[in-house]
Image (cartoon, rainbow, N blue to C red):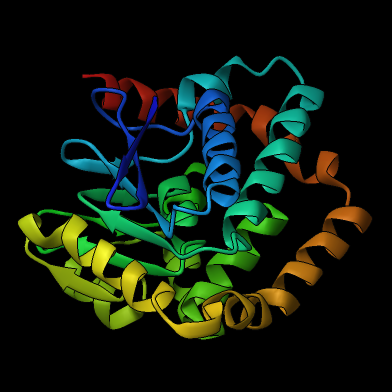
Length: 254
């Protein structure tokens, strides 16, 4: 579930499924809808993406992944997911990720698409990419977005190859996040940044953002057009990958 609230000329979009805040096709389609609404509403200055509870997002829904019957179903989902991720990445108004808790896998990917990432300063929060331990690669838009956010091939390599989880201070040092704040300042700080960037003459933020991200967006579009997504996504039906997905899902359900 993705809940929308308009507050102080800002959309606050909250992931809230009661536990892991997993990314499903419904959540992604709601995100697309709310971004379109925010773009069309001239009173809305920007968007805050956050979560409810102890988790921002654990990533894509594993039950959804396990429900795919063939590669064509996987491709159909990721074709739409790639479009929505790119729309978030190139959204013309400021988007702040207000990370209230654990930010893992797909949750981290969508956070990296935002303009700025603020995390609640709590020692138990973890952030990272676990895909290599499950046996799943990143899609074209996903790896480009994460690589852009890190601005470092070496950091991207180490985070992706090892699949480690990082605490808030480590995440800040690595550039996974931009700022640590106390819990009660998470949303207010996000609003402050949106106002800082939008309350300037001539709306300079939008052309600056599009200029900075244009090259990456064009590369994503080109690679999506020329690539063979079906070939890359066959791994979803590898026996060991499915066993790992089932094991992780069972552990998360406890």
